[in-house]
Length: 271
Image (cartoon, rainbow, N blue to C red; front, side):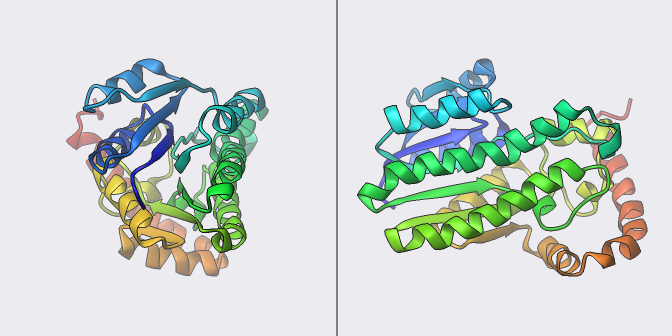
């Protein structure tokens, strides 16, 4: 795709920072959207050009609507939307406050849906564009203690599969990247707050690896890109036969717990 304008949600995050550098190197104009301006500004320091920065709270209906309206009003030349913002609060669903369940759905599902709608509306007249979502292996196989997160990511996977069929005839691509555990502040929070040990069954990815996978997704136009691919084979098998989860969970959780302890020790978080 020729260089154009790219909007990245969760623009202050580690994956967004890596993606921004790669997209800038290809000549794209960058728009970052995040609730935390200081984090966006930190990512901007690694860029050669100053990106547009939008303060956006995607945990509320009003915040989502405001950013969607800004896309249609101010960014009608948008070529790529990257739904990167994510949120997880580990815990059994019955122990989480209703507002926490709602926050999972808002950030991880409602926001990507509404922003994709807005992006499609400005891309359709030009018959070009791409909507890319950073999903998760958690959108393929559900994890204990992450029910709200899994529900949102499962929903996002279904949504992007549907809109791909709708938009492809109009020249607009739709893709998703499905990483396993990524070394970000969100994963470190999970590791220290009772998150699923399944995040640590395999090697923990770097943000740079996920960003590179996202670039491959944009280049190939594939519906789903898995990183690492090997992890996806087990996830997709179990996802196809959900009853397998109960049988395999104890084995994978034991392996993942050992990986979690190793992850914490390597980063000095076990003290």
